[in-house]
Length: 263
Image 1: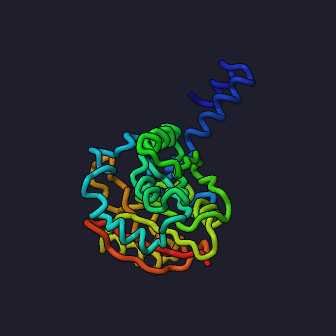
Image 2: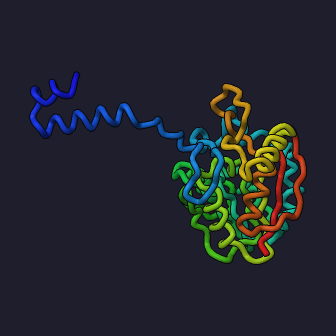
């Protein structure tokens, strides 16, 4: 409708509202998806949507009888320095698979904090630990930017296939560091492949920043799309927060671990 006709047909206040709406529709660009924006903590890459399904994972993947072998979890815990009496955190604990393994290793003199952002998972872990007689497990309901762990307490921290889902990775890592003792170790377990690593390194070399996406090759599966993260990106972000790399190595299939230390 031409502006002159609008002025004749509508009261002044209503006319102003209609014109404002028309202007917005003509000039406003579609906003970037939240996962592709630079985040408040300075992260300039995509992050995946957190898992909100069964505590056992899609198809019971989180509880697979072969998972411990696939992830070489005993070696990873050895390299994290987890031993009887240790204080450990499992961030993004899901159904508590790693929480219970760590609780058995640290024994009654140790403690494991199972952190999650959804109450249904913390409740699940509480009941699971009670059923299995593990009194050294404490659950913590964190937020998407702060795991709310006790300060200067932890000897080791595990982030198992969850770091790619952190809404603000650098903000979370800063809080994680504050919860760790000096000399404590943090282990990431994530998934990537050689091509994803090359893409990450090329993007960083050319622009100084990683690509926005977690994974450039979506597979059409809602459970696995964008749920891989190249090792060079994790190394870069851990270093930005002050962690020192100790080692990284391949696990089974396309999984890897990165172990860093707080100095």
